Image 1 (tube, rainbow, N blue to C red):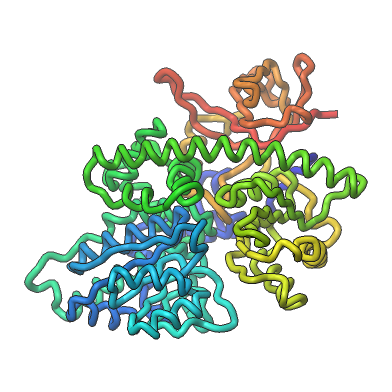
Image 2 (image 1 turned 60 degrees about the vertical axis):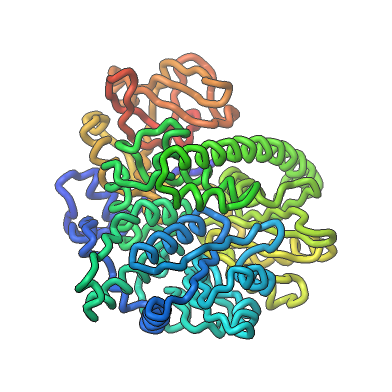
Length: 574
């Protein structure tokens, strides 16, 4: 769809850096001092600001002293996998002897600590259950565990419902009354905080007088991967965690599983970026939970045997290729449904869009929702059958609509519609009976339209402005790459400008390779590439003039480094 290029507003504040381009980028993202760019671990927010942390530390200390059996109950996405691996690795490093894990199969048990999962967990004979990246909505599951005499420590980051579970301790920055300022911690971030708090707690009590103290920074590779893959906002505290994890990864100081995943993807750890975590490693890890059993992914992150890690990574890579094939088929079917819907509604798609096909794979609906959301720029929920007569939905949202709150509003208007729901501002899940789907579609669209208004889904590319000829340099491209990590809510810098396109050709029928020059500097030839393009908006005439929105990136080819424009959007100049 056609988009508008909108330039960011730059506040009138003192300079943060000496480079004018980088300065305006940082100011536009709310960075107002050089201190905010210091990503040393000393800058982490203190763990004692987390509500419930003292109860959690007492619970874990008592479990350690009395040799309790601990079972980690994880989630089936990349954040859940890294959280689970971190919990197992971290607790074992601190000296816990009996730590195992269980992750629900999404197709059999669904999400979270349900009573059914507690029944499965009972087979491990645990005395303490620790949820990671789930649990804040598990009222019935915690009650079932309590009835069996099993203590529960909930560690989560999702938004709570009206009633909290009766757990022995809850650590979640989003629970009511928690003063921790970084509400955007991923599940793996919450678990990391518990581990470093426990180490400090034990250090103060002399626990390490007779034995070595573990270096928990060794696990920041897992924290960085889970944080980026879960697409949580990269507030400063999260950027710090990711920056530290990337630093270790680039130095080769990461677990065997991440090394193996990089190997099967053909990527070098020395040059890894946050984008690689989100688009290269994350999808391969997620593929296990989407199509099979996330235990494969967790075992990959837990093993210290490089050969075994490579076997797991190859299995995950094969699952990811299978996921891509399934997704490609679902995308074709979704295009047919969208065309039919557009015809029925005379070209006006709903602002809150819901699609369902009886053959769609429930493990892939979240990806499809994300793809359609990106293309049509509106909140999207994709449904698949989870049981006879029951549908599971996975949704993705856009700026301006808090998806979990929108579902809450739907549930309040029609309490019988949703069996359960939960999630974040930008992503959420739900389940309902198939007979209510049409009613839900209408009500969801009403809620979305009310919140976004008639112009709320107008697509825009947010730009950091134009560059002058001397800015098209490797020096600036390298500076921009080094100034991240960039990600959700701390967007990688995007620029716009008017260009002459001297050459253009399609690669693999979907990537547009170009040779361009700025209109004001026609002799400055620059390589540009647009990945996965919809060729509709692009002019194919010789030497067209285009307005491009792009990222300035360093590129290396056959040992030669040059600057490249990574094009996000282009439209012919009239």
